[in-house]
Amino acid sequence: MSEETRPRAPVGRGLGRGLSALLGEADTSTASTKNLRTLATELLHPGRFQPRRNFDEASLESLADSIRAQGILQPILVRKNPDNPNTYEILAGERRWRAAQAVQLHEVPVVVRELGDREASEIALVENIQRQDLNPIEEAKGYKRLVEEFGHTQEALADALGKSRSHIANTLRLLNLPEEIQTMMIDGRLTAGHARALITAGDPMEIAKQILAMGLNVRQTEDYVRDQTKSRHAKSDGAIAAAQRDPNVVALEQELSLTLGLKVAIETNKGGASGTLAIHYHTLDQLDAVLAKLRSGR
Image (cartoon, rainbow, N blue to C red; front, side, top):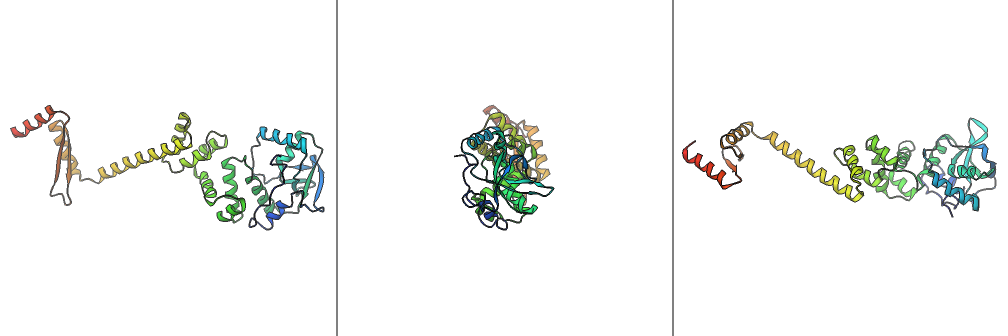
């Protein structure tokens, strides 16, 4: 049985006034006869609050096959269109409506609710977030709206949607990535796992391009970002250390290096009154040359 034709369990309480009951009553086993009816397919129109922008054709075809064989077991949730009372706006179940059109159903079962814009928007968000084929950015934007527009906490969302608190938080963090990386997730070039690894990267856009070029999986991407971060910190620490050194000591190192033709390092102790002078050589001939210069007093 298709997910779209199987009766759905109610959403947890805590998401809006009676939201769990609103969605739960869309089930054929519990819908009241007063609100359950059959409407002409042509009288229904997509909801203005629909957060989904992409409908996978293969998934719709599979749903259409299921509806052709079994019919629509879960009614479509609608409200009267505020702009045209003779038509109805879909709040939950647009995919079922689209698939019904594909198999040329003239009528579909619906549950009609009298809802304002706020409740209609909230239901549309929750209904779509529960779908498995929502891309990570659509899911993240849905969570963001439920938090910012409707005042739900991440903990409440996690409980109501059957998600972990960390999943909600990590998904929301994807929206902090550059728009181009978000586009890569929308079109399927990068997974949410790849993108989560990029959140802490110094240059996420450049690393994303390298990930695609090398064809790295999520675990390889995590290791790659970790290595790049360590390298970046090491270079930064070295630059800071160099900037904090006494310029007179640095100048003396350079002078001795020119005189001896070898790398010279001077480390001073606290206060600068004492320290260590290191001369780096690679062959015994270089060492003999340094000793000769020291013996000659040069």
